Length: 580
Image (tube, rainbow, N blue to C red):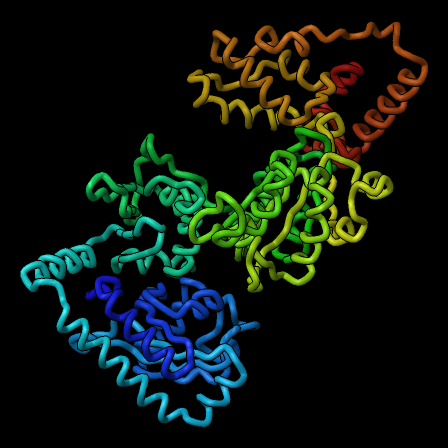
């Protein structure tokens, strides 16, 4: 298939000339929805990626009038479906050898232009046909030497016949080619080529250095092992090729380990069976697909970021970007440009062409604002406006950019106290806290420690290179008696430390950090009267429950459920109170 990019300079002259004469905006788009060339206003209003289903309609029909932009069948799923900046569009397909390869668009973004095109539709359609024919003539006359064409066609046909999926990207992360297998793979995962370009362009623009970030990004979305190869010309990176193996057992390479597929509809990544965690899971299950803002609170190390990602991966946005930003780690003078992006020339050192902010990078997905309590006061009203209007302006820009982003914020601060101290805006606090979720500290759910410890044991196996398959009862006992001021993060670090120290295939108490291993245990005789009374109440409650349900395994499970504790905690208390 002929690439329109090869003829861009000549096509650009045609488009610019007719645009000036007709006083309308014009664009040429390839079959993958990527802008080949356009007027400046078209680029600013609609961006470099066009809704692919719309392009496919024009490619199949030849010519099309969009007199109700955003409200037509072809607009379904477009990011501008409810607020299209165009007032009217005339579209025509470009054909070479009777094969459609792209689309020409005449567009007006003004009411005056809409009236003019609507009153003279037939004349503008005739002009559009002539523009299309001129572009076809340019391609025919300026086509690359025919000696190369058979090889290019042979290569394309070979790739289309391959079982594996192949995708080719340019140096900006834009999709240039994908074979039939890739097309099927993307459709299976409900992705369009323009989704991939939106996903990958920021990856390279944000500092990527080749196909590696593309492979990681796509692999994270599809849960597939991906091989990536750079395309180097004259020592310059000009693009990359990604290969997705056909659906069959795949070896996991060291360079690209297979990532976990987002577990849509499940929150199993939240580990624990305690009443507190069960309540957390139930609440999260109810709100996972909502677009309302979520405010996660909890002590440092409780897993706020882990929960935010779990919500995203369980939601209907799972195959869209998850973008995180730590509000405590960004200098105040860079905060606005990091969040909202900037235009070229906005300030000294601004990149040529500008740069999208985190909001734009998260379009269609989730933006996680970690440590929101540390957000500079000057940025708070700007964030509030974006959350209310769901549009933003880049630093140094003048156009409004619509966004579709779910916001999840997190903090270990008491935001109500910060509001009282005038350090955090009350209106922003209420806007962020539509759905508040409080994560319990680890000391409030010690019955979950064994499950968490076993999970970290598996997770750290690769880091330590140790084949440790279990934790001794003595080690678990010490872990459950510790108060965990650093919460889940401290537990993970303690398990990793112990695995490095352990010389057997079972993690023992002797390998635990000293603060846990040597923690003092008060003699029973020294227990306070209050603690003794609490123990008496617990003993009596367990004894009565055992009499009611029985002492077999099923009975003990019923006892644990009735008392609101885990089965492991029940066994531990029965042993401590000598009820076995």
